[in-house]
Amino acid sequence: QVPLVESGGGLVQAGGSLRLSCAASGRTFGNGAMGWFRQAPGKEREFVAAITWRTTATYYADSVKGRFTISRDNAKNTVYLQMNSLKPEDTAVYYCAGKTYGTSSLRANDYAYWGQGTQVTVSA
Image (cartoon, rainbow, N blue to C red; front, top):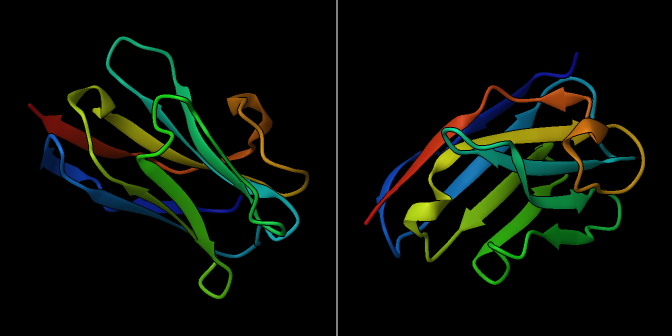
C-alpha cells in the first residue's frame, strides 16, 4: 500500500479559496498519475482533476475548469489542488488518488491508491 494523506480542507465562504495537499509516502507515482475526486452527500464520486506525473499534463472536469488547478511537487512527492472562486456546489469530501503507471484517467476505477478524504464545505 502507498499511503496518501490529504490535508487542507475546511469551511470557506463562496468566492473563497482553499488548497488541498496530498502527500504520498513510500512508493512514488513518477511513472503514473494522480487525481482528485469528490463525493457530495447522496451523490456518486466524481472526477475533479488529474495530472500525469512525468509530463505534468492536466485534465479537469468541466465544472471546475478555470477555477481549480492541479499541480505536483516532485521533490515532496505531493500533489496539490488549488481551488479558487469556490461555490456551494463544490461542497464535498475530496479524495486524492494515485496510479503507479500510465497516464491520467477520469475513471475512479483506474486508480489503485486512495486517501482518506478531506471535507470541503462552501457556505453561500
